[in-house]
Image (cartoon, rainbow, N blue to C red):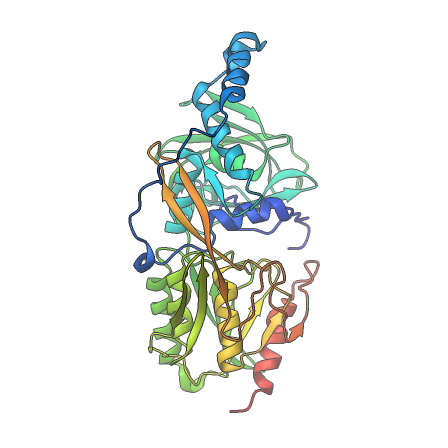
Length: 411
């Protein structure tokens, strides 16, 4: 995006992550989850504590309670949460993690594709929290917030919160900008387009519905293409996907092909990935899941509504998890060409456990293999046509290359 220096990959409304460690955290929050049909109620295993030494834990707890200088800062529940986080982190698996009740709620909202907020995409401009774009029809757009605005301060009088955004992570920004429906958040903004001083804009939060699927019909002298963008694999994805597929089928005879765009798609629900792949693959294995004790092949479900439609798949380094399952299955089973950049490389499955305090535990329970037998964890899918999008131009180079590849395919 010209003029806006992006340091991170972006996902709607401030889950924009820079760096591998933060990005991996994002993939967990929206990462590959078990399908509903595989989730079975389970109870925590009873642990024999006889040989577990916990004395030093309570020693440390006691010292903090009695001697820490800032006693008002001691939050016992926060200490418990921190202990659980540390226990989980000791496993060294970035995808097995504990989510506090607040983070767990936010994770569920993102997969549901609906939450209460102001409706903006955030990134960083020269290290400062910035608006990438207000979502169309959102409270932010109606309040006059524009792409490129720097967010210097966030104030919520209802909760008594008022802080500058200096050194905020994107997770912190999410927590402070979202809030209850019809509550007001005041943003101190700086807009350098006209050299004015920082100014305050108050925005009433509303329900934000974030699409999982977007379809555009692209017509030019080069041909007519369906640009089918898959943003996430969430709770509302299949409803939106079905609508898009029906629109494509209604124009099937006049189309020169489909550009299945999964760039910056961080994944989501396992069963949604199977459903999406099954709209191209009539029969055969989509993915194999290898767990601690068992192995299971997931077969295409026989819909194959888009079978026979010329299709290429657009991916990049932000394509992960469920997006990689779909791209890999289409490559291995149908020979579809991948255009763009090597994908992220997340080859494990997480189960999501709801804890009694409202928090969540994501546990790696299996690895998944592509139909050809590849495990792409930390390696990613290699593309057939490697090309990067130049953010300094108005042209989408990867999209244009996809059109070129589609025109070269002969059925």
